[in-house]
Length: 458
Ligand code: AMP
Image 1 (tube, rainbow, N blue to C red):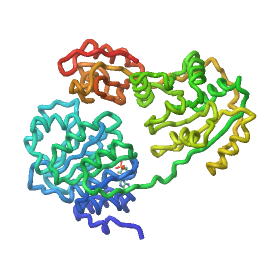
Image 2: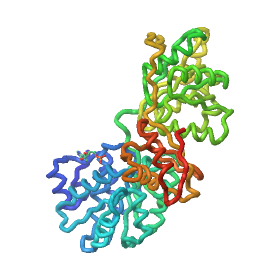
Image 3: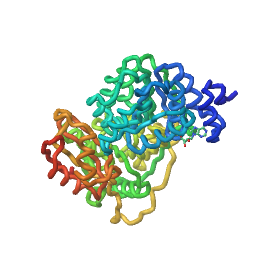
Image 4: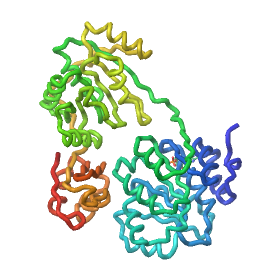
């Protein structure tokens, strides 16, 4: 029997709004998360956007609210201003029969004085981005002692954007007795750490995607001298954001990188010859979409913690089965289907069959893509990476970088900026290709936290 909103023990004023809106029955995430949230237990929910997760945390928050108290009782933290607006709107809609309810958005890029005034007048629910919220916590702009629930929405994206440290500080600054609900589409190591440090005995709920992630295996046979053409044709055919190409030897890595680069492809190499700082830079650029193709050896390819790899190409078949698995396992993660294509020599038919049997998976043989125009390669990346000479050691937070690049200071729009990756001594910022020069100029001519730093496009 499937659940109904009545069976979830949702209070009357909320039930009636839900039926006014026209939602007939709860979604899977709502059925599973609402009772746990109502009990006050910590929870980790793995679900995608579109699963109805906002209602799943909004309803319990609203139901437990004491409207007579005017100090904040719930914090919802979101990675972006746009998401804050969306979430605050949904909470207000669901709470429209709760008279006197005040839900406020606290985001960066908005005048702080107005926010201070709103907070002073009293609010029940704060929906915020991490940086600005932390700012208010350090100013003590509101009474934090009444906060009994904190929701981290799209937690993996917050980590991706470099807000992990801010989120940890926010959790540290709120009452230890609070309930913590963590919503995330994926579960990278960083999320597990946050949960371990800041939740107590959380219940974990996984909402399966309707479609199982699948990894397709393909092989195409060609003579050694045609391999690099076939690789290029495959890259053109699929034209995806992130491709990982594996070779067995450093020498082949260099050859592949050179031939792709000559044709204008956005490509980097990852092999054992790189210094640590070069490796960091190469991986940061691949992660933030400044590099479309990364060519790696097996050893160097270990520890690439990028979830969103669209395509894995084996430029050379590995000798060992576990190496094959390791390589192709980089695709079909984070809720996406994946594709692994091997470019093999005709004499390697037996080896391909052995891999297929050992994997118990079909490796589909495909013909090399028809040759198009080898000289026309449109493989430029969407983003460019700006490397800035400041980091955690300078007490820099992603919000400081965002502030320096956007608004009057930098002139860029928030939507031009991608991942902000603050390391110990340096920061990598992904910006839209067309804005890279002005972004670097803005940093070089301006100041961050009253100090001058150097920016270079890498
Ligand atoms: P979310 O995952 O919170 O972004 O929600 C995705 C969309 O589903 C939103 O537009 C909601 O309005 C809608 N939605 C949420 N709960 C339900 C429900 N029980 N039935 C139908 N639609 C829903």
